[in-house]
Image (cartoon, rainbow, N blue to C red; front, side, top):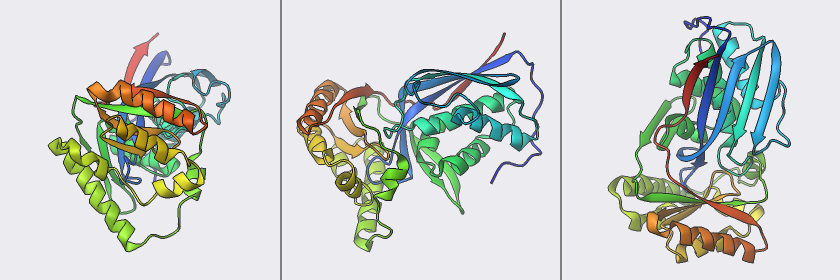
Length: 318
């Protein structure tokens, strides 16, 4: 449901330019299917300015294939805001600097939706609350986990459905690092969801409830010895591994051998997330790359810290 149109939007100077910075995210964290996400210090930056007509420039990831017209997700997100506040959308000049690899389970589409919505909101006078931003974005993205983490930062617990609208964040320890193995191949969220069954056993549901609770408690209590068990899952990873990523188990085991505290598919995949102590990050990253090569696949790893702030917006007058 879109926000009410009675928002107090005000016209801004036509020379106003805004820059939106949105972090990458790793969703699910194993058992927290469609509910947990971590914001990471890898960013897409987007500049927006009102214009006559739509013009989009893209540099970095996805520059060779992302649309540069009104079908661009950033532009589509911006249009939603203008419609919500009752202002005509005449056009937009957009510059994207993309560092988040698309279709890899790192929240690139969530970043694009938020960039458009937050940028347009700044252009019309900061009319939307965070809850309204989430409402608009979830209606388009279809699931809230990446959006909650990208918007709020940290480890986000997102309960956003027909009955509840809540995003709560937890800080993550400074000495944790997040190794992302990013395969060269892409995978769409639709493809990954199609691999899932239509129903689950009670045992599998209870398994994931227990692991999700343990994961949150372990992160709060700094019980790193519990993370390996806590990041196991029976709702999505086994099915996606069999159908799409048969190398996942080998990569995860290699990471554990080198000292990873816990390993999980990042979002819908194909990227793999390993939670590690700071001193083991480089060794785990190297071993995950080697394991992927042994499975006949190519990819590269990133060692990232958590982003505690989430998306931010800066305004400039030209």
